[in-house]
Length: 218
Image 1 (cartoon, helix red, strand yellow):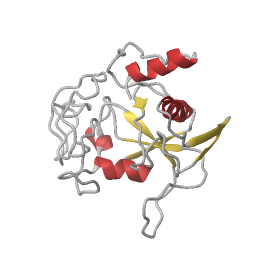
Image 2 (cartoon, helix red, strand yellow):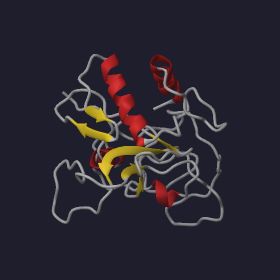
Image 3 (cartoon, rainbow, N blue to C red):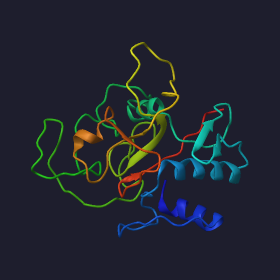
């Protein structure tokens, strides 16, 4: 989700434009949006496209209609499946969201400082800022910045993974924190791995946290 897209929503609804903290707007990923901001945007975007909104929002109470055809946040399982894209299919055994097992700062926007050394990391530049969406090569599903640039909110409440096998899980039914995934421009590659999980309260926001949209194929 870019600032350009999110600012258009703010202008249409009268919502306060989020602070870019000097990083820039336009084609750069939107930042400083909390989880509530993200689901509200999803519903607005669905309405603009004449689709059925996924979320019923009553203050801080948000429920999802999974049969709706509108835009929404990806579930954590969907996010990781898409990030692990190999040869045009999700769910592969790959370490980073660009389809590679080694993080090269020339290929993803992470902290490339020399003081961090791991076998799955190539030392390189640390930009100290976001980069335009689409600046790097996408993974084999055509998705950009699944690792690095900004963290991305998911639908799920944060909880331990269930012990049994799951098919397309939607996460815990309640909790205190929502999941976000992907790593950011100021993180070392260890946090940009497809397997890395982070959490924040739904009202949490930061200069390295944004979101992307998902929509069920129909």
